[in-house]
Image (cartoon, protein in one colour):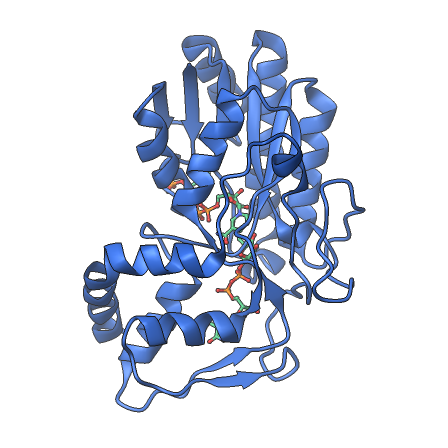
Length: 297
Ligand SMILES: NC(=O)C1=CN([C@@H]2O[C@H](COP(=O)(O)OP(=O)(O)OC[C@H]3O[C@@H](n4cnc5c(N)ncnc54)[C@H](OP(=O)(O)O)[C@@H]3O)[C@@H](O)[C@H]2O)C=CC1
Ligand SMILES: Cc1cn([C@H]2C[C@H](O)[C@@H](COP(=O)(O)OP(=O)(O)O[C@H]3O[C@@H](C)C(=O)[C@@H](O)[C@H]3O)O2)c(=O)[nH]c1=O
């Protein structure tokens, strides 16, 4: 299949590049090759490559910084997807756009999950832009795929697990406190990339949730990860009120992969199974990288 991937240098984009390159005719672009906020550049790229599917992994993902950098976040997360969708509407082709668990307000009692058709209720500016991104995609196109994932980690690029590792290695007696009242599903970028390939190959359409099975708090995730990495330090659970951040996050970020299951497409696994495999593959690389960044900080 002829696929164009934008956002190829990001956490999820890098993984999509590796997975989709195996079986597809893939053109992968970073922001230097294509700035999605520029409608002329987008139109030129879509006209030149004529993708059957265009995957949008480009986004502004700094959740706290987005509260200040609103204009940039809006341009990348809303104007960009609108440009992609409008060009595909003119030239044909499906847009596969990535969205997030944080479109929901998280007020539902844990562990009741959110399904694809549940009402959204964004709490932060980042989340507002992601809701708006879904709206523009649906407005512009009749053929679209929106995949909402959550709490993504992987080898490429910064993420929560790498932050925990860096903090744990940054001084002899680190004092790490992590919120223990926000629940979600830690999800491996590699598994998401495989899932995206499956959806595309099956001709999927519409909104899908694609997160790891099971759930935990951020504290439970950090604790499990550091133990499995063989790092013997104590980290401390705290409440959201005790760990103040500029952006508000949902208490319950648990999604159900209902449509993937109904359509026999679900590849997502329990979060601990994937995390164990990730650590088995990359423990040494992760430690080396974290030691270098910890020494610099
Ligand atoms: N990380 C997470 O936990 C989660 C992420 N998501 C969603 O998944 C998707 C991918 O996120 P993730 O991989 O973490 O993001 P990253 O922040 O790792 O990567 C985003 C990429 O977007 C690219 N980009 C930024 N601005 C532009 C632009 N103007 N034009 C073209 N490309 C641009 C950057 O390209 P370059 O490097 O070339 O400059 C960067 O590599 C996003 O839609 C995000 O909202 C959803 C749930 C959880
Ligand atoms: C670094 C750190 C974070 N935290 C908390 C803050 C927050 O509630 C939670 C996760 O923090 P992070 O900033 O790493 O992750 P965050 O940016 O909130 O992650 C989100 O990213 C975007 C892109 C999404 O779409 C979301 O689904 C979600 O994955 O952990 C601690 O409690 N202690 C710490 O030392």
